[in-house]
Length: 188
Image 1 (cartoon, one colour):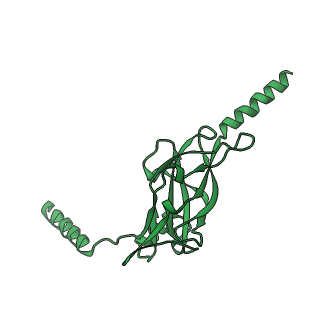
Image 2 (cartoon, one colour):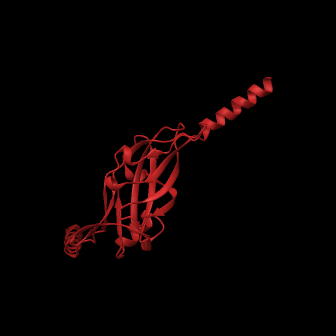
Image 3 (spheres, helix red, strand yellow):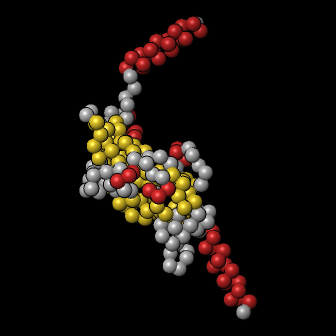
């Protein structure tokens, strides 16, 4: 009997150590993805755009601390909509809260948002965009039956724009260079 209790305690302890929550990487028409164009905005669709779900622990608001929950997906054929299915996020308690952000980028620029952003800054013609950060109550996969994955749209996911990365202004770079030369000249 003592062995059975010790085994049960060990199993329960490992469940808490590897606690995870699930979130559905799905949006709806109220949180559609738009592509900025010269004449206004159109809805993104198809495999030309990749979509990824990024996660950070509850309370994090700095989006540079978010990590990608693989795998990435793509926009569906329905304009502005993606449905990439559930993702598992490492959280401190099963079914606990986490901070999430959806990022969309031109698939031709790279496998991740970060790769696409660097390629766009270096002169790529693609587009990148981030959603607002939402706090989601994740699904609890340790219950029987497993809890329903958390909903991004029910947590306040807003529409987002996928835009070109602005290039540094030539005039701005020129002024910065002249200012640097003047500062160096004064020191000598």
